Image 1 (cartoon, one colour):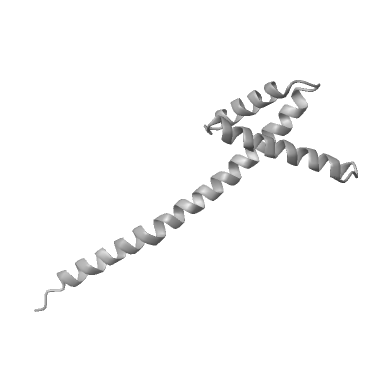
Image 2 (image 1 turned 45 degrees about the vertical axis):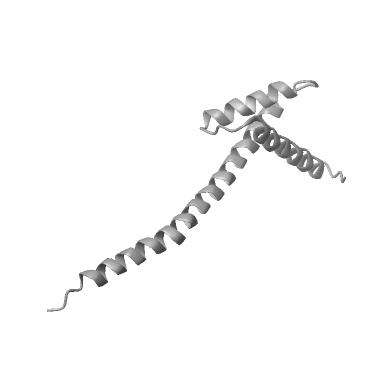
Length: 106
């Protein structure tokens, strides 16, 4: 009888290598992309809420703290620079959306 154990072992090793090289990185990249989209959506909601809650000039610090606490409550923890960039991006988008609604152009 022919022993197929070495061939089976080689096939399993090859399959494991292919999964490790291609499938796992693909899954990780999809998760990261989805997580980025999700955090951006939560940041958009938090920025909009902060703009409505904290009205009046000079309340930017309060607004940023609100957004930071909101994102932390959703399980997102990030460094200050990343958070600041994300918030500024969403504030800019919010102002552009408002300008479009009012019929203004830049």
